[in-house]
Length: 154
Image (cartoon, rainbow, N blue to C red; front, side, top):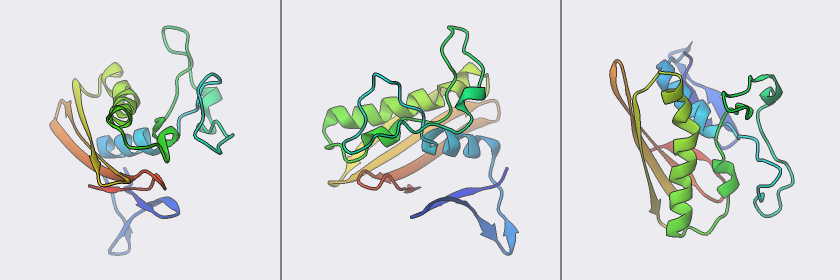
């Protein structure tokens, strides 16, 4: 898999010594799962000033889940942009990450997922976790600026 990195303008592919850098399949799955904007439902309140429900351009092509609801790519972390960082908001960050990664367990790619979310200063959230898969644990960490929603490796 190709390695995705983040810049102020969004995600990009990384070059190492004039070659495209690679990452593990699980690392790529985590990055896409967390930092692709999942479609907001019609009854969900959007962040102040937002009218776009976002979503992935091919959401309509995804199959239905066993319960009949549409499958979705990504997370709803974007919906927390500029939220005041109360303990409840920090917990919502954690819940959105767990929900975005749940498919790894549902599809059998992981057996368990642990997620931590912590406030760092006035505008930063530190997200970290461990995913247990057949090859062993995969640890990850990102810091997110809650005003711009730009992630960086933790």
